[in-house]
Picture 1 (cartoon, rainbow, N blue to C red):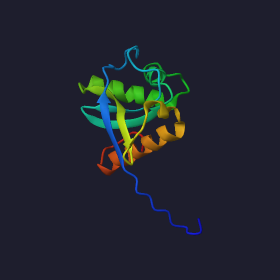
Picture 2 (spheres, helix red, strand yellow):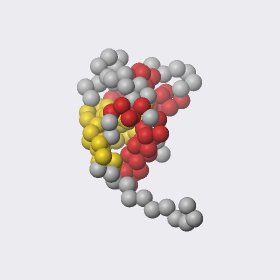
Picture 3 (cartoon, helix red, strand yellow):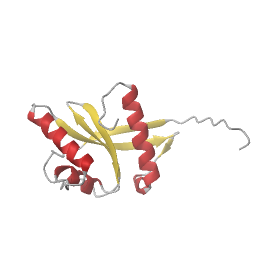
Picture 4 (tube, rainbow, N blue to C red):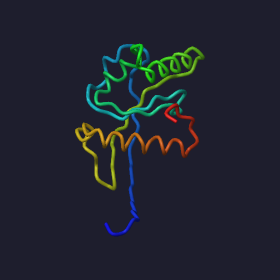
Length: 135
């Protein structure tokens, strides 16, 4: 790498799938596997995250510990939105393709891949002027 310039031609294609989960119920129907997820309010993204275990991560939003600042903040936000009559939904990234290659579901066990997808989604939503709580 004698040149300091890096050129990437990265193409990501993915589909968000709305889950049946209803906050703040226990997430009994969610996968225990890794995922990139998005909290939406009235169909608009408000927070993107990644988790080694989706079920465990979502449970932490519903019942956060006293030191889990992000979970406490998100729980308060989601409860306030529901209290105002808005629809809170959980979506999960599915059918992921990177540069024309399908990303296998088991590949999401790699934290670096989940973080890459999470960052890409945050950037994408920010470019569309969504006010994400991540930023």
